Image 1 (cartoon, helix red, strand yellow):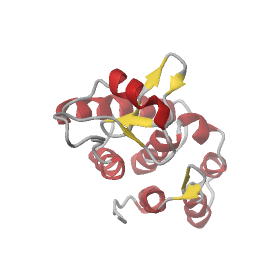
Image 2 (image 1 turned 90 degrees about the vertical axis):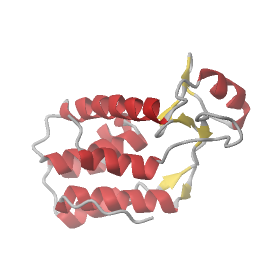
Image 3 (image 1 turned 180 degrees about the horizontal axis):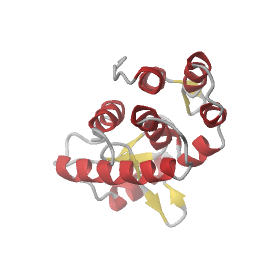
Image 4 (image 1 turned 120 degrees about the horizontal axis):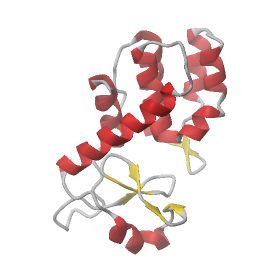
Length: 170
């Protein structure tokens, strides 16, 4: 079961998406990496997978189902539970704060990215806090550019993983 720390961390960095403030209700928003999202960072999907690119704006608006804060929170809880189950499937010997940091990380970059990452290899190898911190911080790009929000998020995730403390950096 996801924790308050996890929900607060993810909702802080994902923020509540509302792409068009002139329309009542929450609207989809394109993230810096070009994916259409709704609510607290839920990627909108079509029959081909994740919806990407400005040319898919009309399709994103059509496929969007999250229109209220309550729906956004419900979707976030469902998504985090799914990602926690995925992280649990890795059978890591870690504490809840470490798991929460990895769930937040994989929610943002994708579970497949976590599975193939050096970060996961270091976690499994019980690497030092310095090594793990450094590896979290490498995942700071969106659309090929270093993004301040990702720098801040990775700092928060590393801190949670290493110390159990939740602190926000933007």
